Image 1 (cartoon, rainbow over the protein chains, first blue to last red):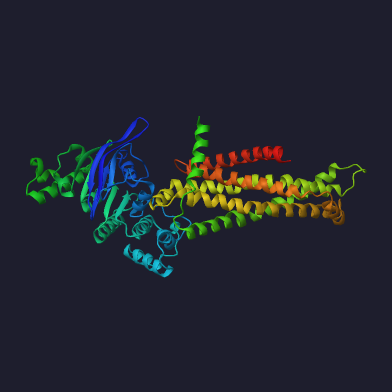
Image 2 (image 1 turned 135 degrees about the vertical axis):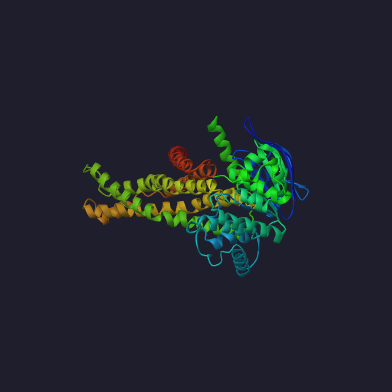
Amino acid sequence: MINVENIQKKFGDKVVIAGISAQMGVGQCNLIIGASGSGKTVLMKCMVGLLTPDQGSIYYNGNSFTTMNPASKTLIRKEIGMLFQGSALFDSLTVEENIMFPLNMFTKDSRGEKLKRVNTVLDRVNLSGINKKFPAELSGGMKKRVALARAVVLHPKYLFCDEPNSGLDPQTSLVIDKLIRDLTLEHQITTVINTHDMNSVMEIGDYILFMYQGKKEWEGTRKEIIFSKNQRLNDFIFASDFLKDAKDMRMLGETGKMPNDRDLDQMIRP
Amino acid sequence: MTFFSDIGRFLLTLKGMFKKLENRQMYGKELIRQCTEIGFGSLGIVSIISVFIGAVSTIQTTYQLVSPLVPISTVAEIVRDTVILEFAPTLVCVVLAGVIGSRIASELGNMRVSEQIDALEIMGINTKTYLILPKIIAAMLMIPLLVIIAMALGIWGGRLAGAASGTIPPNLFDKGLMSNFIPYNVFFALIKSYVYAFILSSIPAFFGYHVRGGALEIGKASTKAVVISCVLILFADYVLSALLL
C-alpha cells in the first residue's frame, strides 16, 4: 500500500505538482494518467525518491518515506522494482547479467541459484533462451520485457512502470500490460503505472488517477471512467470520434441505453 | 557564480562516494574492470606516444647540440631527464585525459541520459560509490604504472632513434643515461602522475555524472571535461614543479 499525501513540487517558480493525494492498493494496477507535462513522471520520481517533494508525505505501508533516514530509504528501495520508459538496461551487460545484477548485489545465493531465478523470470516474460544477447540486439518490446524481468527478479513489493507502452505496437503493448497485471496479481505487488495508453487504462486500470496541470482532476476505476462526466477527463481519454463511439457502446452495454440521448445511427459515420 | 557552485557540487560528489559498500565483491569486480579498461586499454597509445616522443627528443636535441665542447652522450642525459620529468608524466597524461576522460564522461553521461543511473539508484545502490570511486581508484593505480612504462619506452625510443640515424651510438647513449642520474626525478614524476590520475578521472566523472539532456549534452560534457582536465593538468604541472623541484 502506498499513500501519497498532499505532494507538492516546484522547479523554480513553476509548480509541477500541486497538492496531490492518492491511495494505491496492494495487488492492484494503479494508473497515473494525464497529458504530457501534467506532472506524472515528476510524481512518480517523488514516489520512488529520485526527486524530493517540497511538501507532503509518501507512505509505504504506513512508513513515511519522505522523512525516513537514508538507511531505511535504502531498505524500502530494495523492495521497489522499476520499469523505465527507455528500459534502462545496462548496455555493457548481457540480458542474463542485467537480470542477475540485483541478485549479485543484494543476495548471497550461489551462481546456480541465481541463474535459476534469472531463467524463471525470463521464462515468465516469454523470453527464454536469450540470456547471452546484449540489449542492442533486442527489439523495443523485448527490452521492455527484459527490464520488467529485472524489475521483478527480487520479488518487489512495489513495482513502478514509467510509460511501459511508449514506442511499442498495440499488440506488444497488450502483452506488456498483461504481463504487468499478471505479475501484480501473482505476487500481490502494489503497481504504479504512468501511461498515455488508453488500452492500458481500459484493460488494467484498477485505480486511475488523472492529472491535469499538476493537480488531481479525477480518480476512480476503469468502470467509473466510462460514466465520468468530467469534461477534461473525457476529452483526454476519449479524444477521437472512434473512442467516443467506443465509450458510448460500452455504456450501452453496461446500462442498456445510449448516453446523452444519442441515436445509435449517429454513431455510424461514413 | 557557476564556477563556485560547480566546485561545491564537485566536492559534494567526491564526499558522496565514501559510503558503505552494498557488496564488496561487486565493487571489486568493477574495480578490476576499470583497471583493465584504463590500464590495458591505454597501453597501446601510451607505448606509441612514448617511443616517438623519445625518438624525436633525441633527434632534436642532437640537432641543437652542435658545440664540439659538449660530449654527445649529454644528449642521452637530456632525453632521459626530459622524458622522466615532463614527457612521460605530463604529455602522456594530457593524451590520457583525452582518451580516458572522454570515455568516462561519455559512459556516465550516457548512463545518466538513458536512466541507467536512476535504475541503479532505485535498486538502492549508491551510484557515486559504484560508478565513480572505482574509476578514480583504477586511474590512480594504473596511470603511474603507465607513466613508468612510458619512461622506459621513451628512453628506449630515443636510443633507437640515435642508433638508427647514426647521430649517437648505443654505447654512448647508455653511458649518458648512467651519468648524473637523480632518482628523485622518478619520485617527482610519480607524484605528478598520481595528481594527474586523480584529475583526469574525477573531472570527467563529475561532468558525465551530472549531464542533463540528450546526446548533444553528452558530447558537450565530454569536451568540457577533457578541456578542463588538460588545463588543470598543466596548472598542476606548474604548481608541483614550483613546489617540489
